[in-house]
Image (cartoon, rainbow, N blue to C red):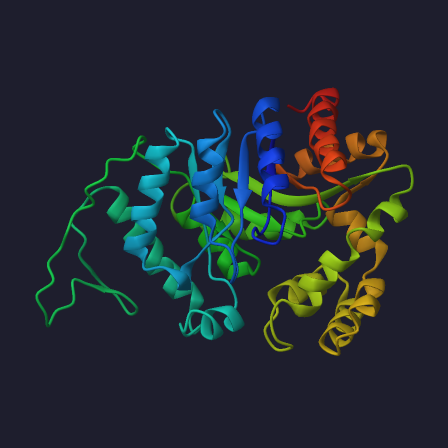
Amino acid sequence: MRLGLNLGYWGMGNDADNLALARVADGLGYSVVWVAEAYGSDAPTVLSWIAAQTSQIDVGSAVFQIPGRTPANTAMTAATLDTLSGGRFRLGLGVSGPQVSEGWHGVRFAKPLARTREYTEIVKKALRREKLAFDGEFFTLPLPDGPGKALTLTVHPVRDHIPMYLAAIGPKNLELAGELFDGWLAIFYSPEFAGELLSSIEAGRQRVGRTLEGFDVVPTVPVVIGDDPEACAEHLRAYAALYIGGMGSREQNFYNRLAVRMGYDQAAAEVQDRYLARDYVGAGAAVPFDFIDNTSLVGPRERIRERLHAYADSGVTTLTIASYAGSIDERVATVRAMAEILDESGLS
């Protein structure tokens, strides 16, 4: 099991801190550093900045928003980042959500699975440097009634194949990840619940004659190290409440649905009710400690080291940590400690 680092969103005063974390992770042999985007900073600009100031660690998008770019533009960006980083780029994609897709990008959220399938096929075709011709429900290249012609990507990426990941939660999207992608970007991953999720990915792999062998399972796992697990969990309540309660509308919140599938239906409803009523403190307080404990690494080093075995046994291949608590010095200490704890566990 390898280690990754998720730096989340940028542009909120955390830029210098996040670069420091990326450099430390690079020196410690972390496998990859991931950057997110929503409706603020964009991921590729930040990834190029990190790649220019690191030497070994891969840089990955978690994620590029599918409604935010044409598939051809995503292929151009991926090829450029892979070239500039010396073959260190990983392309993570995600559909975002209806509020961002329709409210920010002006793209209808209808049929996200079918759109993702077409989008992915076009990106792969472009990166293979084939003439870009496609006739689908959502994308037609070139347009049939104008002067456009099928073009070929002019950039030669460093590698023949750039690894592609999908951020997925629902069963059908998980199947798509297994069928078309090299890895899965997971959130609120519980080793005890992973079997149901991975079975959907495995079904997708079987559809194309493959197994989970070589497939990269990459959950983002918040980490807070300290003597008291419940006190550590307090640092993560706002984060959990934001996703369960506020990432989407009442009718379409994929994270809330995941919590329900995990057995937290009553708590998920209360968190959402409170969050949508703008009782953010109350929403955080309504997140069960058990949910945080099952989907995070909290408590003393020894407790975390033991918990790492559950993640590895469940199928995780790259454990991506996120350090949300404390000063920059404390967050750097967490990044360093996780490298030591993984080494002590014998799982690296």
